[in-house]
Length: 225
Image (cartoon, rainbow, N blue to C red):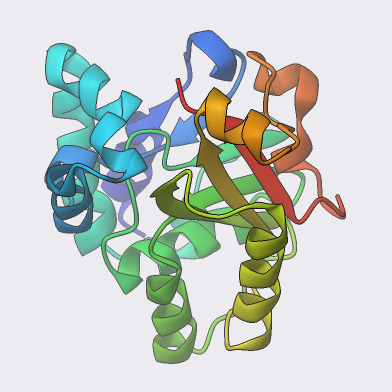
């Protein structure tokens, strides 16, 4: 076993978050290094154009450099089960600062989750197709202790009826591994279309909806900050 990989993985974890993620650990890459993120950010009409992680990494050099190293590591190095450290937490987030870039990254995240069955992992992604491709390429399945949340790149695009239909369509057309759909709205649009905001807490630890296995909430709605 290459112990250097375990050490690198252990160092890649973020153990101190502020704001709504206080108390959580995460493993992330960099949105600044992700081609999908860069294209969506440049589009100007997506939620990515107002990405908090993009802003944070732009002025926090230490975090920016760490996430850049993580991108290189997690997308190019295969992590074996015996190289995964024990994570002494019950909830863990994949991608607090970045996004899925390739299928090896998905395989690595699945391996990490499978080796820490005591913990619930949540992954937000706008690139669910990469998960689908990874499952087909490596013949792997989503770990039972992982929640996968498909995040729409749009703002103020669909009402509650439409997002529920999108969720069902994804689940019925090759994306049954998706557990929830994440949507972002402005306050005005949400009020006009009577959209229930169920991600309004500033403290994920006290809410925990996204990290709860078996939670029946299909669509999570948040106000754009």
